[in-house]
Amino acid sequence: MVVEVLEGARPTRTVAVAGVVDELIGLSAYMDRHALNRLLQEGETCSGAFLAVDEQYLELLYRQFKQTPAIASVSLRQVMLESFQKTIAQSQGIAITIQVVFACIIAFGVIYNAARIALSERGRELATLRIIGFSKVQVAVVLLGEQALLVMVAIPLGFAFGYGIAALLSLAYNTELYRFPLIITKATYAFAFVTIAIAALISGWLVRRQCDRLDLVAVLKTRE
Image (tube, rainbow, N blue to C red; front, side):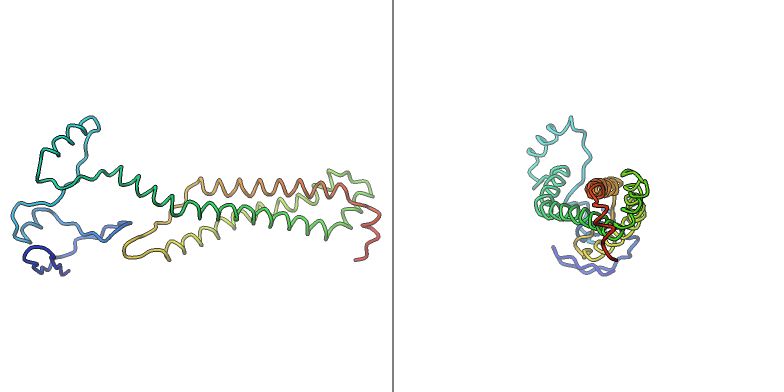
């Protein structure tokens, strides 16, 4: 790899790449400090340092930094992370919230419409069951049991489909400066499952009320 130094005498050097580091932000290269000093022929110099400091010695360290004129600036990792997370929360938090709300509404609409269509298509059969002696609960179990089975089958398929979309989005947003790793936690799956379960329960309750109020004579008179 050819390295062009942009400071001092601006030399150009050729170095071997020993490994690749997977970083999420920025374009950085790392090299042993002593080897870098020999490469640039600068002697024992350095422009920065990463320190792991015990919290009880932070104030003492700050005072020491202030008394050292050669130190130009100090950055705290925790402060940088909090600032980055705050920026991301402000820029994407509202958009993500809106998307989640609409996704929940769409999920409820799909499940409710499927149950309503099933009730409309099978109204004659359900009314017939009521007339021959089935109770309201038994008729509701026939209708809603089928819908519950469809929901249980659709949930794992939806998980797989959602994972695929997330993977494609992760690849699409990857650039030279920023990379978005594909990280899906168990809480995400739990939230999706609970949302679908609540939507299914509410839809089932609404359809159950409509099923209980079926006009048996009118339904049976309806021509197919």
